[in-house]
Image (cartoon, rainbow, N blue to C red):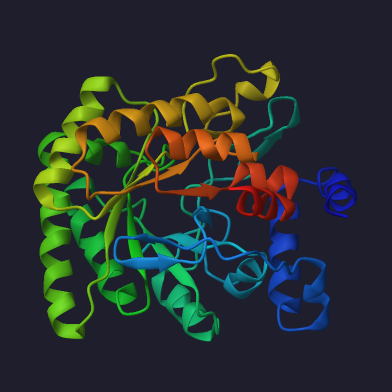
Length: 335
């Protein structure tokens, strides 16, 4: 059924289709029409970061930026759902068009630019969700915030979502916010992590619950850069790493016309890059720091590649767009 629906959706503008689909999921999640996407999956529990995940297959951030469809995605059988990226203030993101499908490559290019309704609106949605599964919240900085003041943006988001999140992701790897990837390196990385870890410890004392902090990194890193980042994560006591975000590379794409579009590339073309980063991280991270693998997962085989490379959990995004909820079922059933 999804393949028939996809044919119609893919005939429309990519972002319009995205918004329409989320609108349907939000509107009908609490009605009998949810049977069209609801799936009963076997329990395949995994304990990671002190959290018990019903299964190791999650939804990556970016699909439900404002947390409006948490219940619907939970009904599809995801073991965990990551919402965001959210910023302190609402922002419209980059000019449209900013989302492009590359069917020949089973890929997507986006330059959304953290378009979202702001952290307060996301908090309201999470409170209304009536979802009892694991929810990660992905946080970032506003585009207009100077790099020197970025920590304050992350702290605002951290403080507002802390009590509601099961884990919190620090996004320093989107290619669509100018200067954001600078925080993956050197003193900027250490200062950001130190500030966030300090506030995390204080919030854990205040609220009486420790919420893990994970960092999402880019695939466009050298071996030395990955090693240096792993050392920083070890030193700062980061609770987990998500590998990886989208890539700026266009190597090997069949759709050369769309390849010229600016933005981050996701899907099958990023698979080997992300898997390579996972392997390097696993060599250099402390054993107790888990990795969440994402990038080009569109089958049981590609999910197992991430797990075999050293990931404890995996996340879907572009593969889910192309294959629908059955991809979640296929992977969980056969793992």
